[in-house]
Image (cartoon, rainbow, N blue to C red; front, side):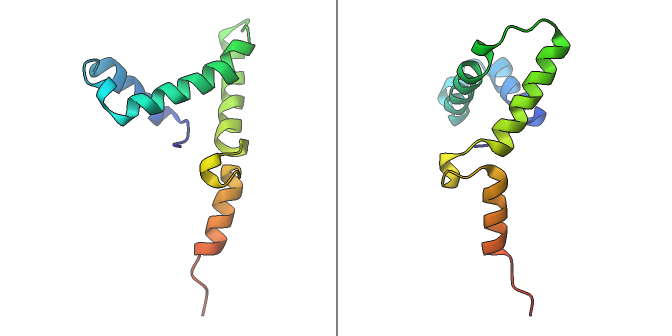
Length: 96
């Protein structure tokens, strides 16, 4: 799953806002719905923010956890950082 970054969010918003008639026909729609559900159920429903600053800080903490610490089934139940280290070890060319 792609990492949650501002560039991804920009692309998602562009798809939703500029292509409302075709967004439901693309794979992005399924990915967006899956992400929205995880973000809503796993984070937003559990918090009541007292300020915009608090929301930004907590959302950034959640994003870091989601991208780097959370186990991903697509990565053999490894965190992305663990998967990257394993992949690099296995796929790095050996020095002669």
